[in-house]
Amino acid sequence: MYAAPVLKLGTNRKNKVTNHGKSSVWVYRGEEIARYGFGDDHPFGSDRHEVFQLELASAGLGDAIHYAIPRRATVDELVLFHSPDYINFVSKRSEEGIGFLDDGDTPAFPGIFEIAADVVGTTLAAVDAVMLGETRRAFVPIAGLHHAGRSHAAGFCVFNDCGVAIEYLRHKYGLKRVAYVDIDAHHGDGVFYGFEDDPDLLFADIHEDGRFLYPGTGAASETGKGPAVGTKLNIPLPPGAGDAEFGEVWPDVESYIERTRPEFILLQCGADSLEGDPITHLRFTEEAHARAAADLCRLANKHCNGRIVGTGGGGYNRRNVARAWTRVVSSFAAADG
Image 1: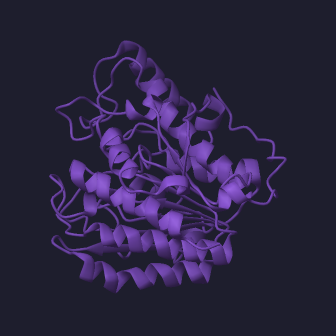
Image 2: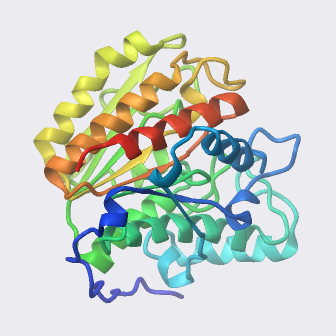
């Protein structure tokens, strides 16, 4: 059985951001994360990486973007969030290459363990780049796998890179108050329930009402448990809600971040909340994602030395994925500070 290690604090955690870091957003790309997917006939196909990278390349951001490479998470890193038994289960199914990791949404195939660990490791690499002062803002397109719980897979998500990143920030860098903001159409249940009783995990999630969409959670009344009651913010929207409805509730998220003063911000910016997604019913445009990214950068500059990492999350209309994620990166690049 594995035990969660106490990781050594980063020796350069107080380094100032270099001029190169101030003027560029680190965007992660590579086959290691591109191959996370479940086949061409599955909504989560591996082509999502390429359509985004092509759109980003045509956006004319030039030197505002620094491309960075993925890395693989170690078992000692995975176990910061996930149970040893679950990690061993995924490893075994990965070797067998058959069946499912959950009740039918997330197929097993040969090598899925290593591929999923690449996603987690790349999010951790982005966290390191920000914490070590190499950049203030980073974006990982194939990441934000927010449904996986501490002991189970769910909703196309094998390992929860966001959950691991939160624990990593605490164990390696000694941070206490991390903010997780999620604008994916689906509720970030793996993160919410993974930290439901933790008052120091700041959680704000705008999503389609769970009465109409998987995973069926995230009611406004879900504000935390035990010592964390009242510390979490769930904002469900009805099917068909668009930019106007987003604009009505987004100030609540801003106020929440302003009030809680985080030390680091994680943004899960799934593009399945845009109109035209094949499996959801919200009708945002990419303007919602651009606004969220810009406002969170402003708040990050004010409260946590500009430190923010974005993850792509869901999104199954390829045009929406490309445009929404590119607008997030553009907002990151335009942020002052």
